Length: 509
Image (cartoon, rainbow, N blue to C red):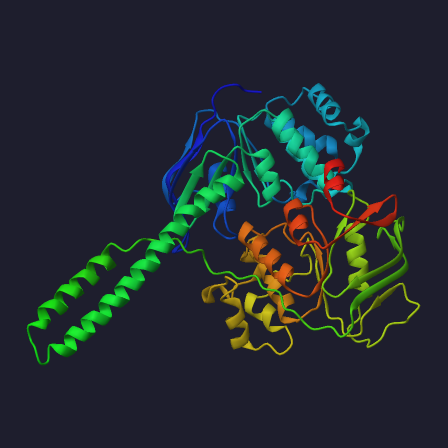
């Protein structure tokens, strides 16, 4: 791997889509550290990465790049074009990208290093799990392409906790190369990165520390500025009231006009020097809370969950009751059946049935209103307009839809546009908004934080913590799981076992 100093960054860079600024006047320079790039959904992180890679051209400023810089990168989504290729061909492309097309011994060394049998080379790439597809692409970019700097866009998406632990070890121990990592996984960033860049509407903010400490430093001046601005508002209101009194008194005593003028001058000076504050774009992520009549929302008895492809038995559940207000985390290794269980529950729910057979293995409370968040968001109609999608909710007209979309962060000018223009994070917010309008009382959430920014994750955590809705969720996000869950169920050897806390699972996953 190259040992020369990698130089990559931007100077006074701006990018516009039409007349709308995605980012404006930002400057940063990457160093030899593992650097996190964090920002709210839709702030331009993916666009920035494309500009760094030369896929898009800046409207202003410049990309700073050392001569001959080799950049390895892994996008947020596995390219569909790789699906029919063999693993051998996929790794061969990385070899060629590193200028070592004939050195197949390097592939053998890589597979041995990461603990993968050579027989995998003859498998179709799309027969691997989504997690292992991403891990192989990351390993190939880091090792076979011999980059001077590695750029990873949401590398933990679709990875279970075991694979995340593997990835953390690779990035911190095995792959010694400068990195730029875009992620919203707070625990992952704290364990892997050493430096943090925050991309916001007011520019780029750089900190030479890990994410959680950097965020505290970022928000501290914001809070101080907001406090000063509040005091200035109070002072302006006091002076405006004084000026109004002097104006009234000046009717009888014209000399008081001079005092009124002096007060108005002070008001103008405060207005001119008013403290500038950063206010994040308002994008509330809210969950509706429907009432449920009985204490138990869902009962399972003698349920067998099987793989959708080959019918292989994944797990068996003897008895399980989910009470109103339970927030249940489903833990387990990749392939244990976590997502398959949630999908089976979603398929079994029939809102047209008032009662469920008492002998059925899945029995919902008759008052249950269920919604299901699928991490792939495959059912989201990308060609449909944002407005029309929300208007599909029962009883929601055009004005109602606009009223709900605005505080969720969807500007009026975009509402007629197709859902396809939205970032993955914005699509997730749209799905949650649509679910809210269905007024559910039982949520099935499969990797709900995958695409949400940190603020969105915190909104979701707060909503779940303070509501009485029931929720079963699968998440690789350790911070989210620790914060939200009130119960923990682990899949062990095909059985569902209730445990006191997730720490032992996190430690051994």
